[in-house]
Length: 434
Image (tube, rainbow, N blue to C red):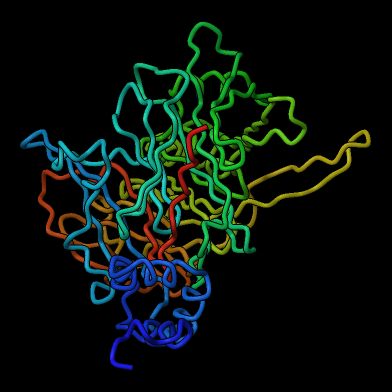
């Protein structure tokens, strides 16, 4: 036996599982032969590979940041990894997508992310063509064109539910070897002629077609109309947060907007609700309410909101950073089970003196970016001009996550978590034409 191809399948798998701890290299080995492609595509290989190299395959937490540059009227993106040894971002690109192949310098139009999956759109306006892709493996899945096209980009979101029991925001070492997850792409349709009529388009992994749903909304009319006309979504939170199969948006007024795009009874009716924000924000801290100093995120399966007051308000509100947690209460009302949500448990409240980073000078140029996915009392902060830092709120300490070469004329417009799991998440499979 002088040829590796003469080895039995199980022996060859054991050899391949001991390749250098780089799952991208394993994916490239699929090109060697049809046999290798078959073995490396088998769920057994992915599970065995991860089991042998578990210590080397802890998730790599990264940040996909979109930016604009005022001096040149240009835009772009950066991928900032907290483990550059394992995740080399040098060749990170979206140029493999058909919509960007002729415009390689064009930044992607990102709608949402889940671990290492990214939902992109071909255009910023007149959105019609969407792609679910994995920039790490250069795989992509094209959704059918949307039934309707609108001048401006609608509110849209990406929901993923892993069928192996992992939460959609999990950063554990779980793998999804055969795309064992269900997902939805949701678009809220603008309808300026009738502000009380709410419709959404949903494309799901179950139906594989665009379905239009009517939304039943029980909430204050002014908040309902302001969200529908795009007036109330804060700049730093236009992208929604996926939470337990729902999409959540922060509003400039006193509410958090929550959309449940599932129609379990098949009547093409979805539901939404407006959750009142804490009294502290609505009455005692108007600068947070109007300045957009709020951020939604999911950590440990819990929806949390981080609020931060500006430097000029600290004489009135000496605690600049607070974290709130959404609580769900199930009640019975006329033989119907109803879930009521409210922001409770001001879990963290830190005065300025406990966070040296928030000095009078630096707090003005700092922005909350997101929650740290697997550490419940930490947030990402960007401080001009170069630093991404992780602030551990419970201890008041800071860790430098990464530095990226930005300039003073660069503005970060959107921040998305990008988590590289122990094994790359496969994109959905294209269905054969009928």
